[in-house]
Length: 271
Image 1 (cartoon, rainbow, N blue to C red):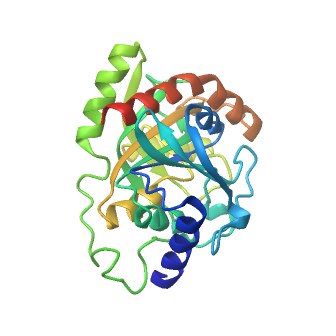
Image 2: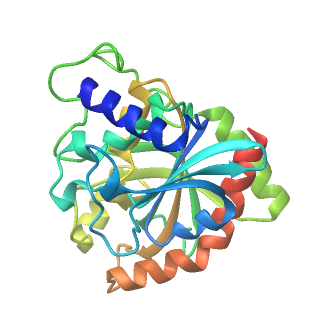
């Protein structure tokens, strides 16, 4: 893994003249429009990048964008890799490893999720305060390479409190109703049954999705600060369950995209 990461880092540095971004952004379903907020200097398709997987999900473009927001250098993933696509967790999180070694110190992750908190509604934007990992494979399983991070990782603060405080202040200034809550990650790709939604709620989560958690674990393994944001694209409560499909998820994410884009933009400018 170490050698593959370093090979990819060398490849990207050569393509971007050692751009060295400080911020990494993972753009989830329907949130790829954030690319328009970046003054793009370089764009590299995943298919071109040495050792990279290729995104197969609709709504995920599949490119790395290097550029600036104000004076801040960023790299954005237009599309992520999911365990349900058939990749193992080391492949899913490989781009996060690479981000660290091209300069990224702060990682911002976004996703679409199903809400179980009765105070939420479709289109709400939720800041992740914590997560519950229910994925069937752990991204740190197997031999540990101490060059990346420790064997036993402390996860007491997966999402940086300082970034959360900044985001809350920004949301207040922008008059965005920013919800706060716990994200639970399941394997997917099926949307949850009513019984599963009840389980998610009983376990103490506010929403459920199929991504993000492996990326954050690996980022924290390398001591990167993380911030997570989720768009509630469907709801499952204790009485009924909405019929949902991927197209509806993309539409709901799109409707909330302007708020998410502005929040992420201002977070990068002010942190």
